[in-house]
Length: 70
Image (cartoon, rainbow, N blue to C red):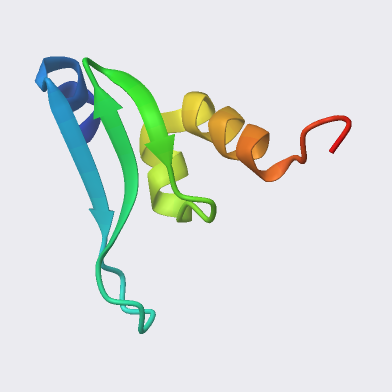
């Protein structure tokens, strides 16, 4: 977990999976391309938010809010 932020800076494409024992199996929870967050799951696990900090928290909050006018 400690090395994920550093790996993100060096990877061309980083896929992060969650396999915590919750009965869902493994699932893609985030994708980074060239160190930039391009996709995250609608329900990001807390450990992912803790590892990637405010950037991920703000991204997941933006995805959960409905767009104005819709």
